[in-house]
Image (spheres, rainbow, N blue to C red):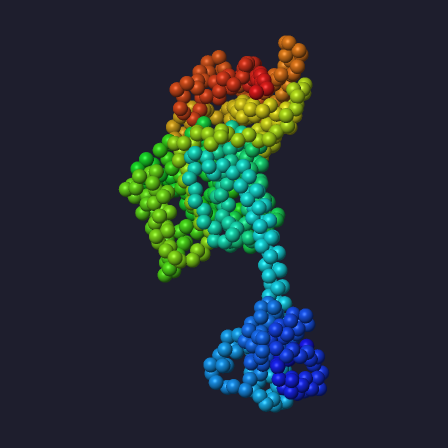
Length: 570
């Protein structure tokens, strides 16, 4: 080792020099504290033998300065002293001393103390290196966490409409990353899709699955896919990319304020609670499906539960982290305690906040054991637009051009594929007039729905006039669609640019739509379709198309419809 001797007694320093040199140490000598500090600064010694009483600077002050210079490196200081009183020894410790060597020196004891300090110094060096390694790993992990958080926020929150007027939500992740996925987005017709997912476990491993699911949710909702197709795609994605032990209990809801209906798919989450104007639960939508990512879905597994939506309804969704939240004694919040808030004594607009207040008081300072999510849907505000208006998907903004596309959907295809997203996305990939996507979607949706439901499946829209008939209508639709053996729907769209009278510029376009179905048709002369005063669930489709289009003509037996939709640049 490089050993620095700081002693104004030249005899002592000479004796120590010879003893240490004989054992192979490199020795440096300083004759006072100032010189000792300066030599340590230059030579960066491994160990210091320090006298106490010296001119210019005593050993106490020299030891303090050397310890400061050593910073994080452990440099043992052994004080050379002839005193053994407790006060003097305490001063040595306070100044940074690590051991004592009493005069006169004993060679065996001197070497034993140096050996001991060398072992401590090496151990300290190893610990310091390990600490630096851990700090580097922590820094790298922190950087990776920050990147992960950024990606998670960008992907999961991009386009999220949890600020929609009809929604009130609260989430409390157990760690940095949330294993509960809560997302919402509008489809092209203005309906609101909502998903609450609860992944196996929590933290980063659980949150990893949320990112691909959020992308699928936003993309397919924007393209107009149905809730059942969303469920199918999300389930397939989880099975293909996640470990077998990872799955997602989920509830998907479509709030359709135009049809005044709620579509619900619940796979593994607690019951969805629907309350009336008194705050009492009038409907419990139980989990009747397996969580997503467990196994491939059958047609039956994809079926939605449908219910009539009334303005006084409020819908409550929550993850099991809410009812399983423990108090300091380990007791769970529980479903019974939650249900006390739906006894009719709490005002409906205060139930959400009273649940959170009750949960907070119950938990006290108990640690969180799972991610917690709570969502309320206020059906009276389902038709309100979010702050800043309805979001619009970024589409190509190409000059109006001439084009023509045709589709032919036969029974086997219609049983398994919703034709609407295919048609609307084909149209939008060619000509996407800003501000007209929603109207085109509505027109095509009504045309295709009428052709399939009434033309091929023979359903009567009058069934939807009562809540019971409304549900029976959609159940019958599923049954007839499942056994549909023949029939077709053909659709042709032709676009023509509209030119300016003044300079011949292309300022808009006209989309000519022709739809044929193989059904028996209907007496379109006797149809009394009206929007004004029609608050039911049916009988508005033809009037809605007429209100959006410049022309609507039925031909033949009523199974042929021709529509012209004109648009101009906004």
